[in-house]
Image (cartoon, rainbow, N blue to C red):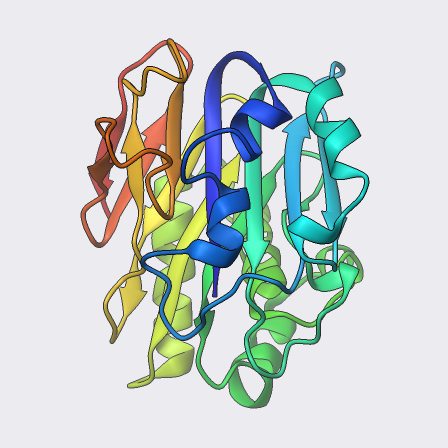
Length: 259
């Protein structure tokens, strides 16, 4: 499990996104209010953005966010119109390692998963691996359910030409459900191609993890955000309904679609 968040709008600093809000991801690393199955998010953190060439980029650390001496200088010097962030509480069986720290990315997508897949190492991982092309499988560096979900999502996009993202996610979740049977999977995903932010609130045989969004937080003029927990309890954040996909674009209002 973890806590994650994303921002889309006018360029802001990493400091404004990750640290400054009253209940920022930095605060949630030790003071999360709606985190289940853990008390701290101390098993690493990371953030992602799209660079000036339009390519996804990430910074990850296996240290707790409060222990990274690089963060202060990075947070004040980086400024972009899109941010994705994650603080990690490692699932049992998934070691604390830089390779297992999100966000993940390829040459198009940034990807973060909050949740877990039951019986992943014993049952689900071999079945996902069998569905992957050599090129996609070769990109996997860690051993988490999250990275394998990203790999399977990428494979679906390759196999199903011109498929809409919402349909690719439906297919992904359906396949995971088939592999896990009566067991539970928590599947809150954040993914973006730099143009649209997609955020799912979804689970199989379990309540979905918390997820909120806003387009009216006064700390982020003209910006839109989605987060596991609202950055400010006094601002107008709305809960994403269970089994829905939230879509944020620079020029449109937040949109919801059933999964």
